[in-house]
Amino acid sequence: MSYTYNDEVINEIREASDIVDIISDYIELKKTGLNYKGICPFHNEKTPSFVVSPNKQIFHCFGCGEGGDIITFLMKHRNLTFIEALKDLADRSNIILPEGNDDAGKKKYDEREKLFKLNREAALFYYNNLKSNKRALKYLKSRNIDFKIINKFGIGYANDSWDDLFKYLKEKGYEEELIYKVGLIVQRRDKSGYYNRFRNRIIFPIINIRGKVLGFGGRVIDDGQPKYLNTPDTPIFNKGYNLYGINIIKDNRRYDKAILVEGYMDVISLNKYGVDYAVASLGTAFTENQAKLLKRYAKEFYICYDSDEAGMRATDKALEVLYQQGIKAKVIILPKGKDPDDFIKERGKKAYQEAINKSLDLIDYKIYMYKKKFDINKPEGKIKFTKKITQFLKKMKGSIEFDVYINEISNNTGISVDTIKNEIYGYRDNNLNKSYKDKYSKPYFRNNIKDRIKPVEFSLEPGHLTAEKRLLNLLLQDKNIYNKVKEEFMYMDFLDEDNRKIAEIIYKKYEKSEVLNIEEIIDELDINTSEKLRNIINLVSNDDNKEKAIKDYVNRINYYKKKIRRDYLKKEINQIKDKTDKSKGEVEKLRVLMMEYVQLDKELKVNH
Picture 1 (cartoon, rainbow, N blue to C red):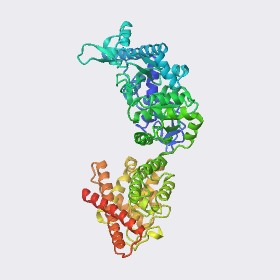
Picture 2 (tube, rainbow, N blue to C red):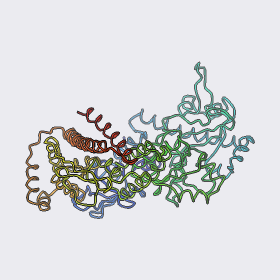
Picture 3 (tube, rainbow, N blue to C red):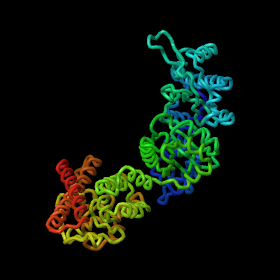
Picture 4 (tube, helix red, strand yellow):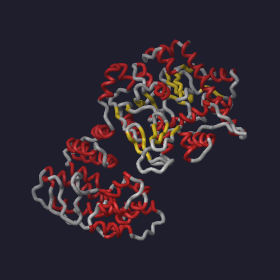
């Protein structure tokens, strides 16, 4: 016999499943405004009409009319029954389902429900403790926390006792083993018994989007250590999958904003002053799974960590994690030594809102951070700053903001736009708005007049040209190859002019269609280039492992590009060295060029 799941179980699985994340496993989705679009998997179409809403957690095709939630999608797309789809989603979210004919599965499910009830009982115990403990209430009052906030977050207090909670739960009929399994007690070293995990601490229940208590955080009210203590990972609690305060955001969607902070008190203080859209990670670095959870409940995202060095590193990491999930978060900068809790208590909501309004986006924050780290008034600091920021900008190639930030970096450092673009683009012509010249077979000039040097002749080596043609041959065969290549290797990365023209058309066609029409590509090329395309198409492929072949071709092309750049640097360095009377600017330029030359030479020897 099959097991019938109640509405609570079904809704819990729905809530734990990200429709965009899961559907992306089956079809390619692209963000368009608040929603995502793709080619409908339920009927034949060329123009995308399949829309997925992350906020509503539903899909709808405007072409064939199919629609529903994530369970419906799996049932239709994979031809599953309702129960099969539910089990698939439960497995993805690490949710245990009871099984009618599986005693072990039923036992695990029942145990999980008992653990939730145990935590709820403990939360009530801690809450009642707080109401009767003058010392704990005095501490919270000193932190400007009143009963309205205490009730909103279910804040409690763990008495300075070794076993009061343990005894209370046993009297309620809960087994020792379960109390231990949920993390409320710790086994003595000699294994003679157990004692309370939390003692003499303010207790913060960690509540999920379904309103269930997953675990607890505890803060000392004296000088004890550690300052914060959290429930360890348990069958119902995983720090990397949950956020403190997410239940508040889920139930309060009027702002459609989320601020990521570091601690429980930051979340609580911001709420106290009306900024009730803050969440905190749970004593660990911000994770990809937490980002996935957060993006379901907000449209605008901010990070507001402590302003010390550790806080800046954590901010940098969180920005990267959010960016990988398609979230462009901004950073709220607070005065040195201040955290959100301190700042809003001292200056109020208006000042905090002003800080939000002045928040920095991803690249602005990178510039801010590296300027604090490196002294750009000194040549060495300027070089390190530019190296660091360009490493990041390489990931941003093609974005609307790209040129704006390059100019800003140039203005901040005095380093020419050309030099910065050379660092990012691998030494091609930097005037990206003009048609690409075959500068590898003709004299090459720097764009900036003051940096202009004598012509340097370049010619592409046969191995390089072969790698470009082979890569194009693979790209012509399959859009999946294009999807793997496009972010790391853009069409501008082809150095041969004809290959670059062919690549540009291929890339643009793939952005609009799933399959290439070769004749359409040929129509856009001149006679000579179209003949080269035919030769590329007719190449015999011996690539059994296409992924490895792609990697080899890209590495080979990049190797030759570095060789070309190294040869160019050598000539430019020699020209400056040959000058008997060098200006201060030329001396600094020589230093930068030599550092780059040494680094390139080292990389080429390693990869040879």
